[in-house]
Length: 252
Figure 1 (tube, rainbow, N blue to C red):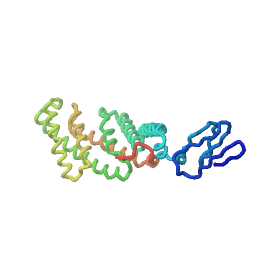
Figure 2 (cartoon, helix red, strand yellow):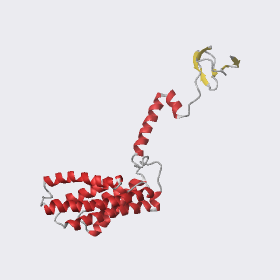
Figure 3 (cartoon, helix red, strand yellow):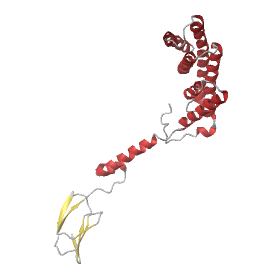
């Protein structure tokens, strides 16, 4: 303790106490300097607490101040919510590929614009290298589905005269997808199972009065157009600038 004029200084250059009591006369203007902080008071007595240095990191603040902890938690939740609203480049490229497919289908006046768009969504990958490999598998699967669908329709619709809008035909389609998948697996193209099944279902379930062969060829062409647009969009250099802070933490 040290007295200087009308002020009394209390120097605490150590951290051995959690807190201490200092009492002084009422008529003194007292300046306390608990190291390394400064505190001024005029009370008869004051309780001085020796605290840790002011925390700066988020972890230190969360340990010392519950109110600040709640603020940080709310800020983190808001940031995560906004993070999921930022589209990644793969999402943008998918939308562009679908737009191109629909535009071409509109110009072609095709009555079934869904086929190429579905193929583009399925085949578009995070980068051009993976798209090339998958596109090759999907092309093989598309041709396999087209041939299989034509033979399937030729057998049950044209030969056995089964109504393609009837329940029996729906049951046959459900059963017919099993050998198709087995054929794709025998060709060692497991990555083509999805697109092959989609092509088969669309050909069998959406055929109207068109010729079976022409209809199957048209749907195969639609699928190939979707695959082509997916490759084209992935190849375009300006669309390959991925951003890190987007929804694409997991590319798949």
